[in-house]
View 1 (cartoon, rainbow, N blue to C red):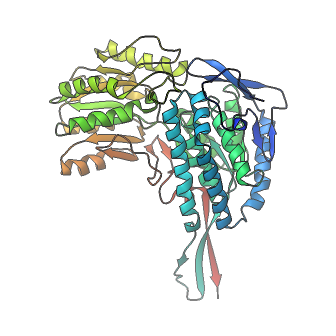
View 2: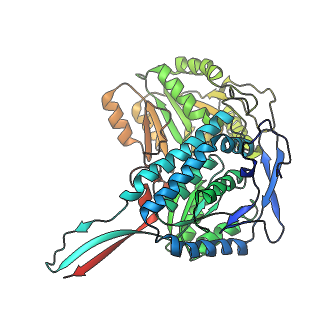
View 3: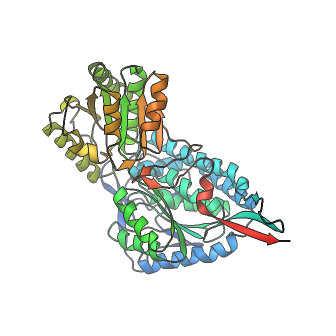
Length: 499
């Protein structure tokens, strides 16, 4: 029986993947209180279905189940864990169209982009598959001749994974996949906006043969989220909290976990600068900016947000960008394979874009590209504004201090390299940055000077499973992906043996 409360122009090959129950242990459950909340389709704001709004007591039960499962699962040899991960990844690949459809339904992401986020998620599982049997210890030469020192890596326990709405398949794979790969168990709390992808992944994990309690999915309404977040921080059975989301929420969660000396992984907000120097290849820079700024309608944490263009090429760059954007982006039904640009996730996103637009225009910004034709409740057309040169109060503008998280590109002219770098580093966050130049010396000079965890040089997309993903300053703690990503979810133990 379908849980859908609306019709969609897609027929699931496996309708059972679209479900509205939580997964705890081996059971598919609803809330014992009968409470639930609506999941909305961003394309039209209609209700898709209702999912359980679990109570704090039920979250405690889920943590307890995950803890009991961990006591057994941690003993499973690496090769067996690898086989389970391989099967899970293969099942996700086999059901990629259905998973993409569920992502499109609850996030409003165009179907072609949703297929991309499913692939990105399975790329992470493939990457972890190749690393599992490489996670180990070492032998350390001892100073005392009658001692031998070795180290081993052991799983931590229950990992609470709080995942964001903007890439639900990939972010769950990146967090839960890594934690499970090295022998932990997971309680996943997906964003209230996109719980259906998490439930579908739990279905496939169950079919892959994971023991009950290894991967659990709990859903919670926005109103109850602070209380449940507190439980995940305070519960002693949760040994690691992994969170992707806003800097404000991340700071709170990290602070609460610090009170209990609990391990955390925090991938928080950014405010990525995108610098185009006078010697850049303009066509390459324009295409890179479109990829960085307008992918997912501007709703990624590594999106270009502060766009700095050298004053000598500013006019030409702006004209090329305004011409190229309508050619590169196609809006329409998110189910149409030709569509690569969709709505924002909700009215909250729309309001923030409007706020940054109004603030920039108030400070003298000119509109270079905009289309205000109504196309749905959460749709914003790709928009380009340009600010005047020589602004003394640039750092006080709204977009200078927080992510727009939408398809609004605000261009700022600059005169000197030092000026651009100084402004780029003026925020409290430091996740990603981008710049374009043909000067070899400048590549090294600016890449080393930018205060971010990731730098893209003449590329607009930096995310890749083989790269350590994460930020500095208030953009987070720890790294996801890369060669050492699985070690984030292990404890290093030193053993000294007397002979």
